[in-house]
Image 1 (cartoon, one colour):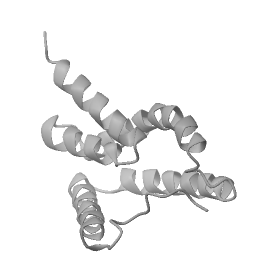
Image 2 (cartoon, helix red, strand yellow; image 1 turned 180 degrees about the vertical axis):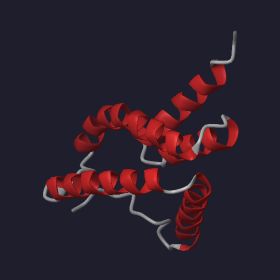
Image 3 (cartoon, one colour; image 1 turned 120 degrees about the horizontal axis):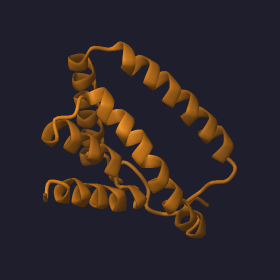
Image 4 (tube, helix red, strand yellow; image 1 turned 90 degrees about the vertical axis):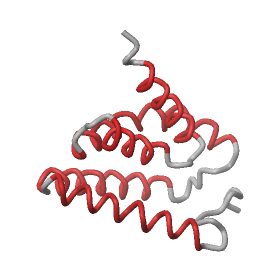
Length: 128
């Protein structure tokens, strides 16, 4: 009867983190694959569907605060869509174990970058 409480709490927390730009989608993938027992490729699909409303709700706030560089918006959207299609095609052609290892490698690289980069891997100030 209460099996929905933990997924609801994780979805809420990762949604808030996603809206703040912290990488809630990555945390959602870790939860789905490590704790909920969802296959990696299905978890990635769920994450993509989950990201759309989270991003749409966060976008007005980011625009208002000056965190959206409108000059690179269209090229970034185009590149993001192309990369998403390419990634989906590649992910569906890979074995589950390989996909998990690649995702683990991605997390390690991002974590090391955040840990050792002087500015924490990014900038907290809006573009000039």
